[in-house]
Image 1 (spheres, helix red, strand yellow):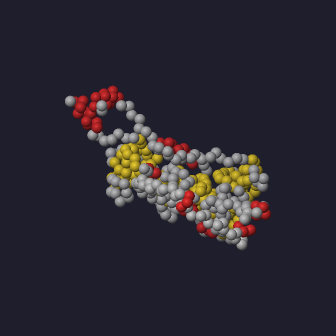
Image 2 (cartoon, rainbow, N blue to C red; image 1 turned 180 degrees about the vertical axis):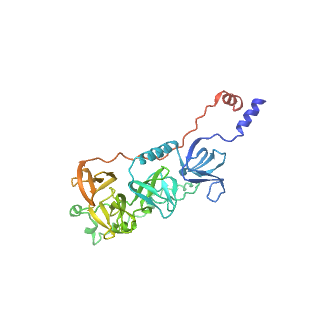
Image 3 (cartoon, rainbow, N blue to C red; image 1 turned 90 degrees about the vertical axis):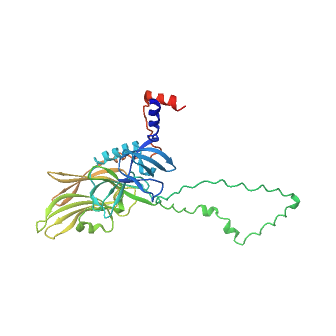
Length: 384
């Protein structure tokens, strides 16, 4: 009797989990039923572990650590491998030099990958500052389309048609006459094949920034929604180009004693390019004229991140990774001293190692449990 009661108690504790996962968004509501209008049973935070109880197409029923049960979209959950990939991405982002501080005017989702459908792991608040560390382009994808559950119905087969006899068939129609423009319809001719083929239209792409937050987490955001925090009296010279990075080259004071910075920036004339910037420019503030002036500028480049700066006793140096006229990558080092810029060295270089990728999930991790001798005994006697 005691064994039977224990077995019944074990059965009434709820269904065993089929797997486990972790919540991806900063805040995730579990629903009592399928549908956005269903009441929420619990609100979970990013990274909380949940158990997978049931699966219906792309929706899953999960159980949180506090016992709450509800439905959610499987695209809002991360596997253990994805959590490990996110940590590797954050660890790598912590070692990359800053390419400037930025902010947003409105709430902005941070994604696990430079792709709109990828899970978002946190949300940047309006006015929140963060660090830009890398840039990437990716093919543009359409917004996620809501998919409803559809029941496939078998279509009835059409009734078989009786074959008509040869005598019952109508005579074949006479062949059509050649049209007057049959020569034009006979194209392409050999001369047409020798004409140049127009290039294919480019695939639309999005520009993304890899950002690092104040608490050390890293993720991807759409670049067009990011505002670099370079002062307005310098940003006005962007000439509608995209400011990709900026760095302080030293400090000075204006006539009123207010602190001013000398600046280096890189810009891009047009987005969705296979490189990170196409020009750099150095601005210095002159107290006599009370304005910023350009002391160095170079255009028509193919440059890549990271841009590195270093302050020393002889001045401030900055290094750029750019392609030469033969397409070979160089590391060009410049010295900024006494409000002048000069090229110090050119050496062959290579691009940094690829960034860690957050791999897409194919299935959730299975729950591994050790049943023990009592569970084996229960299955032997009560599950037959």
